[in-house]
Image (tube, rainbow, N blue to C red; front, side, top):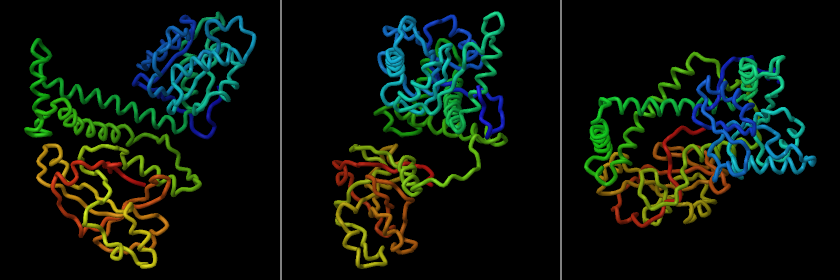
Length: 401
């Protein structure tokens, strides 16, 4: 197997530890050596023999790595490569679905003649298609050598590039979630009364998060409370893991085409949740149907286009009540901030003033824009005034590009 000549060789065994590895091989005797190597590194996996009756009823979520035998049971006597290919693609489709996420296929096979056909036929295609040849993982006596499989897997992993970044990040989340559970569950001695006592701890967490309103949904509010601990553990784990390690992300700058659209789309995915709902949550954006609206003339340096900017559909309001009021349902009124959806092409005519806040660039409905708010218009409205309104999207907490 060839290695990536553009990066230094690393002996890191970075594969998903959260069950996002699939092995497809009709011969268990040939799959077991691979399973043993993965198990040695604590890598969980899902195994399918390719038999139609044993395939999942619904696709496996978020598969990252597929170890694929090219010739499965029933294909031995088939001479037509197109028939073999069709059968194999049907198996893959059953496992990952019609719209798979970011994934890699590693061929684990003695029959590599269909590899190029599979590469060109899969849609969407895997990020990479590597070949971990079975024949080269055996010794002179024809027995599988686990150390060779391990070595060749490390070579494969070294070809993953930036894909390893996402694998490690997912692994950190998985490990941090386990540590969070252990931190909370170990407060109570593991004995016959553990279930009863831990329920009281979870009730205390729910009330700490939501106050007396926790009675409405203990499970939900206890999970929100634990999220705070999880986030801290994740951040600490990232800092301790990556502080003194080499990076998976190279420092070479690439001149992306249409960079503003890419930034706008990235910011939208990071900072805006598309939520068509009537639940009133801080960060919700609504169409502004109130009498209090931003005065475009006070925001714009060019009166010739104020009419275009002043269209009704451009006016919005942002729900900015404190999040603790939302969690503990202490709302007596809603704090709202009027704003305007400001097309990117008019960004240069926006006034600069302390009372004007402009968001980073977003790509909304295929249009680049900013959200502009006039802080002088911050006001309060009664709960009933927005209780029947639907928010098309919500601002998340996060960092923009």
